[in-house]
Length: 193
Image 1 (tube, rainbow, N blue to C red):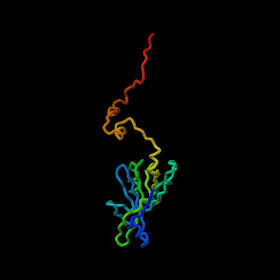
Image 2 (cartoon, rainbow, N blue to C red):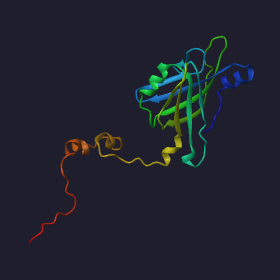
Image 3 (cartoon, rainbow, N blue to C red):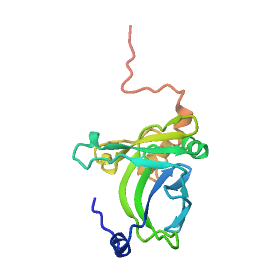
Image 4 (cartoon, one colour):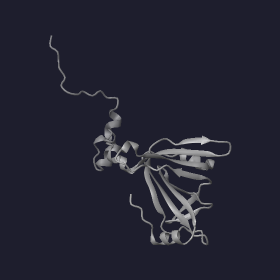
């Protein structure tokens, strides 16, 4: 994955030791949530990135030809209970996750354009939420975006799955009513005595 810094980001990196924050975007079934490691909420790219109240780490996914080894974990540590509840109540398998590194202008507290996209992958494992005395840690396994090249998902025998590949085909519309009906497959033989 090629990584280049914008002109504004390059000049800021060279000029001063600005505050560095990480921006995490999780695309759940109920919508996209965005968190940052900053001390307060940030606005960038027309959306608000909520201060997480803790830290998060993103174990890098190795960029390798071996797709089975291309996985890592995101860990949100010392986060509030409301964040853990949001995560626990969402559908996430196969949904996109992106991690950016951004610099903050010390005088305006604005994100210097454009943050660097450092990781992109898909959530693949269940969220593991551990409660401590006064903190909560949430961890999820992620896989490389290249893993879809090695998987064959196929089509299930229902209307929704079938219409993802064939939007105008309604062949499986009546399947729900046919679930209890016997199906004769192949030739039936009548035995004569």
